[in-house]
Image (cartoon, rainbow, N blue to C red; front, side, top):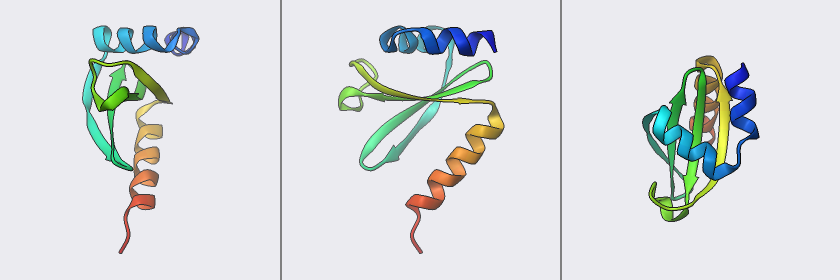
Length: 85
């Protein structure tokens, strides 16, 4: 809980630097032609968008989810909205 509060107060570049040093990259996914990288930091799951989809470049945006349950619900919802039958 405290980590979440402090993490959200950091500037974007500092958040991503902290994630890269202390978190675990779980993988990536594609959405609308963009690669989104997913990191885990204790009980936080963070999606990171980078300029040109390159982890060495400037971060553009974060999406923070607290808890595995919230991550699963979010990813299921994302999957359903991008899948057409």
